[in-house]
Length: 417
Ligand SMILES: Cc1ncc(COP(=O)(O)O)c(C=O)c1O
Image (cartoon, rainbow, N blue to C red; front, top):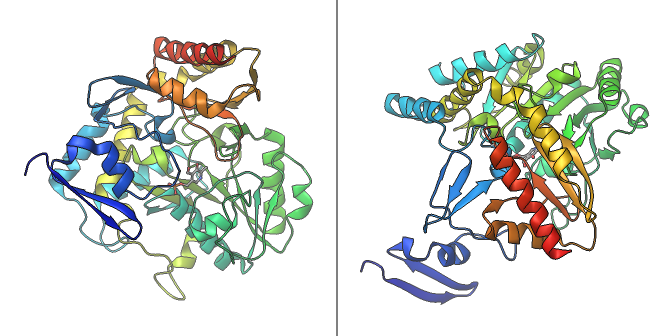
């Protein structure tokens, strides 16, 4: 029955079961895969290579978002692929987290710690960003004996219950209450938070560049003051570097440029080099709370999957071998800042290769994103920045490619103006 497919109706609507699925991936995606938006772009991606995605007809799309902030070395980077293949041949999953000494995991923990401040002593591997945040919150509660959390307005830290509780907007919380009690959202870059952080506060969840609100960089003096206040009152500072990590700001991790050390560092996205991987990193004294009274304080089957860890090691190696990638970020940043000037552009915000283009109300951001996709450029929106375009290309993007993308954005804005 090659190429044939069967349709039938269910109570929820029409469901399509197919053989020869390649025939119509788009409609199968829309009917069989659970949807989170009303009208997704449903671009059918056949393959991805370097800084481009390709549809089944071979049309190329320049990747201006790295899907999102994941493919820092572009797609199919030879060093990452080689590392993954080598690991697949050795072994894939063999045991739940924390029982066996898995080579890829162990080497990755060592490599990660090598890039961080010596105050960081242990790495715990999970599968995603939200899991890293959840586990960090658990550790923080147990270590401090407190339960209050402070996060920041318009921040996004994940979609599971703990992360949702600290999300910096009520927009996506409706229908999911009750969430965790005693969670508070302060204003980002506002010094009044220093008074809100007290000896009752277990943890502060913070970002160096707040992603969900439109890539807003923290003022160095502000984030350092938050660090100092946390130390003063015994509150743990949980730093979310899920988007800013792995060279995206021109540093291995953004906080290294700010000059402070968090208590717990959360990683994911580019850390896994395109495979699912997250981690939280902390001094041993904090990690000890999940090892005793009772043991198994946080466990996961697939956390630190050997193949994902191998991909991550490949990203570290690739970035070490191509030092120029991080070094070239300021030049590319300047291109973004100087090129994106137009009467219908309100402003741009960001740092490193993470930029937000804020449009004036005359231009509809979603229309810009849709038109750009048709022109072969992949961009995206933000959760909490209204009428804005996300620009976070792979670090491997060339100046010519960047120029093409920025010109395409201006062309579309011109067209709509
Ligand atoms: C800053 C930040 N934190 C946490 C998360 C959650 O990560 P994940 O989607 O891997 O759960 C995201 C995801 O977009 C993020 O951007």
